[in-house]
Image 1 (tube, rainbow, N blue to C red):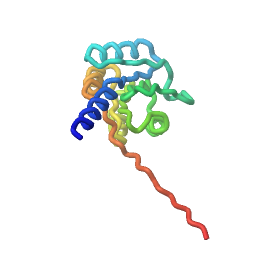
Image 2 (image 1 turned 120 degrees about the horizontal axis):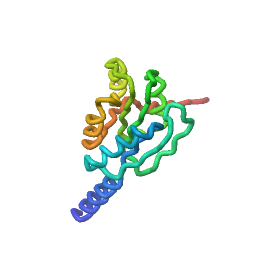
Image 3 (image 1 turned 90 degrees about the vertical axis):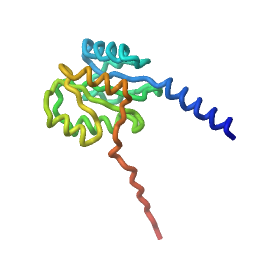
Image 4 (image 1 turned 30 degrees about the horizontal axis):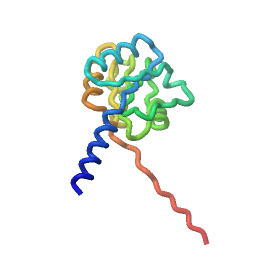
Length: 151
């Protein structure tokens, strides 16, 4: 019995090692800077997606993604961004947002939903530290069961 448990642990560790971090940004320079810093921190593999997250209709994520860093640029519509994240990013995937707004209120709004927000000019280092430590999105969504009974 112990032999099977060890195999399961090895399988879980191997699957965890195959996971990657995805950086989504339409701004080439910022995307390259974040990816380079994440790689230098020892996190690999790092994938890039050149797309405007806010205005994209459908985003196809690779199956191997365990963490996503999303660039929202100057967008200050936090409920819209959070709704987009909940609809496009899987629940088991860690998520962080980077933007150009240096606002404590914006950061607090994201934190209320379990998503970290980083200011792109000065907080990229903290973002990389968080990604290297493992992004964990505190889950605020809950499943709702609806039963319909008929006669």
